[in-house]
Structure formats: C-alpha cells, structure tokens
Length: 261
Image (cartoon, rainbow, N blue to C red):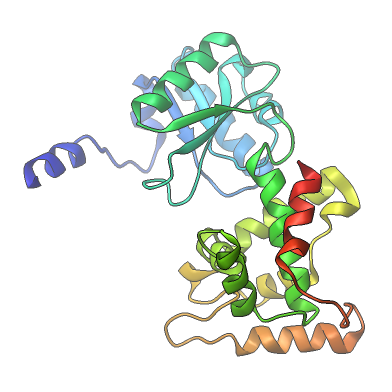
C-alpha cells in the first residue's frame, strides 16, 4: 500500500559523508570493482564505525582478505555479493576470508535470510563461485562474436534457447560492460592465460560503450546503434589479431564454464 511504501522509504537516510555511520551494525559497500578504491573506503569506514560493526563488501571477485587488511578489524570484514537485479535475485554469495570470525559469518548469514535472500557460503578465491564460472562463459561468447562465428543477437538467441534466461550480451549490457571488463582483467591476473580477455572488451571500453545505462554496449539503446561494434569487429579481423574461421555453438560457450567448475 502507499502507506507501507512511505514507511519503508522513511527508513532510508541519504548522506554524503560518514557522519551517519557512527551507530551502525553493518555496512555494505558497493563502490566500483577497484581494489585500491575499496581498500580506501574500508580504511575510512574503519575509523568512523563502532568496533563491532561488520564491514561487508559487495565485490563480485576481489580479495576479501586484502580488503580486510586495510582495516584494524579483518575479523569483521566479509564478502556479501548480491546479484543483479538485486531486488529480484535471491542468491547472495557470503564470502569469509581466513581472517573472518565465525560470529561475523553467522550474523551475515542470518541477516541475509532476514532480507528474504538465499545465502550461499563460498570459500574465498578470485571470482568466488559465480563469477569464476560465469566470466569464462561471457568471455568465450565475446571471442565468438569478434571472430565472426555468429552475431550478438544470434548468440543471445541460441543461449536463450539453450536455457539461459538471457543471452550473454544482453547480460553484460545489463551488468555493465565496464564491470565485466574490470572483473575479467582481475581474473586474468590471477588465473593466467585461460582467462585472457577478448580484445573487443577493450575497444568497447575505449569507446565508452559501458552498457545499457550508458546508452551503448554490445547493443545500442535509444538513438544509439551497434554499428560501431561491427566496425570494431571488422578492425580486429582485418588486423589479424583474431581468428576468422571459427564456428559457434552453445557447447563452445558452456565448456569453459564447465572446465572451470
């Protein structure tokens, strides 16, 4: 009802500084996927929050231990990764580092359940569970696209027919191409060649095609089109940087995911 909506909205207190953080039980950080930025934010939170406050990061891939080391309370630092769109998706990855204590883990699991979400405790590793499996799949889709094995819409349609709720390029545009790029760079730095990103990602980032929110990603939105992406693919192929005699299949995209599992 309108009254219930107002009641919930009245619980939200917007702020542009840390003044409101002096009396909180848990903080969930959601700044961009940049480890130095996250460490800076956690160091600042550590100074203003009570000693017992749990500091959770919504990171989808970065080291919880490294983030926790930026504070004087690594035992109170934990990963709490929501999935997009967060108001719809039930799953939440809960990622303790080797420094996180049991009380913090138990509290975050209970809190997640109170949010009517489904917590899954995941051992810390680059990418955790979901993105460690998902990114090789998305990366392989991008390799297939830049090699001319199929079009973006053709790949999306094939993967929906395979059983995915949306195609890989629809998904990346929704999540944010920049987010996928940053996570991919991080995973490649930790896992090596098998996570090496398709070159098309970098061209999209250079062109500011960050995804649906930016008006353009793999697809165009509003008055934008995907013609610039087709030109990028043509440039990659003519440069000899990518293979051009490959074929697309749903299995091709699924195998890197399965191999990572």
